[in-house]
Length: 358
Figure 1 (cartoon, one colour):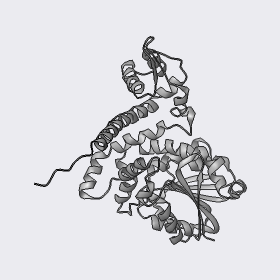
Figure 2: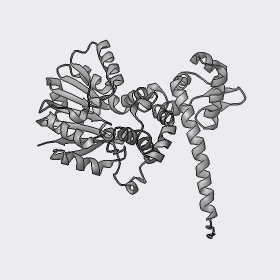
Figure 3: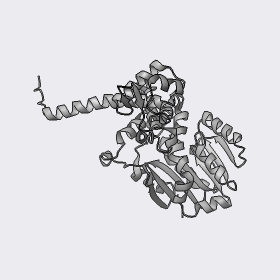
Figure 4: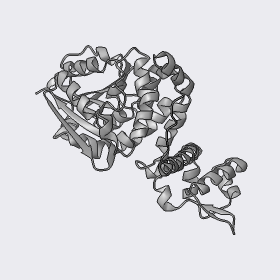
């Protein structure tokens, strides 16, 4: 028998404390997600210190469930509790990060991903054993949560912050140009642009008919005439120098054939056109992501969604952490001779790649 390893007791104790923190943080993540989905944070943000019965009545929810949820929120230091009056209160400093009114700073939206990923945990475990991937169709509520996330990270900042990253682009959109969005999902970003720039024409491609149906329905409700959506494999766009602007918001790294998609994008752009790609900020090298504030979250989402949906299509499985270095290299190999990477001061999660052929 081999010799047993000697433990550094202080290191062991520190890691044990970290594990207990993980238990509590993981549990609170689920409770915060429920608080968002049930509207409890939005309700409490408008109330003075109140009893669980008063909160449940205002939120039109079951009091017993609300009371237990409040127990998690109080012990998790998210909601304040007054034991003398048996009242609960959501501090304004917390509601500023947990309510729909806080958009684009509603952190509660992102907590929903843990439940979305947990839904396919059994399938992911099988992939660890046998390889392969989990397809989009296996994920519950993916498009709903992605639409909310997109609303915060892209749509809220699109007109005032993201589009102006490209010099003269706002003016060109006002005059009227041809725009394509790759992996458009439920179409929120494209709909926002089509509303803001009625003289431009907008096309959205996505592999999911569920997503494009939602997008088409919403654009029709708004009476937009300058927008359309199509189910399409974007590794075969099949267009030549048609578009002035092509965008991809958090979409390229999910693709089965990202290298081919980027080549197709370059072909579909006019010579003086621009490809604007938003993707996860970070390095292609794991050791350079040690100080990234949400690196474990990024790698988890990547393993349980981004990477696996690509593998389910026999794809390259770049993953969400493909990084700035590899992204820049692939853009240049696809035919973009100029690639600039920009960031927004309020957005530590994303990089914005501005790619031009000339």
